[in-house]
Image 1 (cartoon, rainbow, N blue to C red):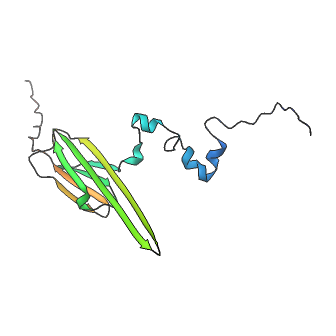
Image 2 (image 1 turned 120 degrees about the horizontal axis):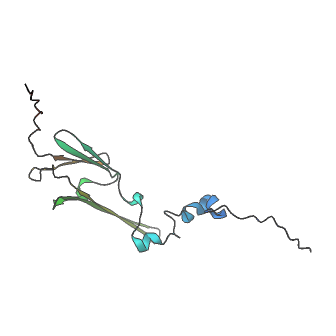
Image 3 (image 1 turned 180 degrees about the horizontal axis):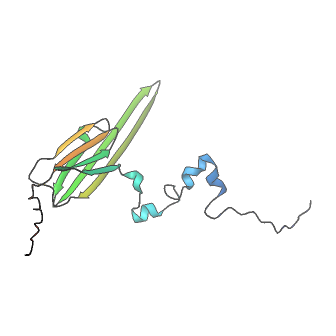
Length: 159
């Protein structure tokens, strides 16, 4: 047996590991979502992947808000407005119980989210909010207050 000393040290590139190249370990070692990122738990930083995608469109007479939330039903949502803040939340619990040939299999899952949106002052809180859930998209329409349109400036000629 012989031992040789080499000055050519192989080290992983900064921020990478041999485990991150293996597909099995890649998700675990992911610095944003992996199990080794304890900042998620201590700081409450769960990233954007924990909340549904949100689109807000301003139209002439209303604001249109869309959330991508597939797999839910309209009964799962709770929507309210309080002190100029729109609260949107949903909870879904799935239970599967199967009994076969002397064994019982029980599975359950629980998913929830909550989103809060500060509304602009133009939203008319006295009008009803229209909310529809279709094909995984929750769509809400919030009416604007009727405001007087700014009058055009008038030019005065000096003679």
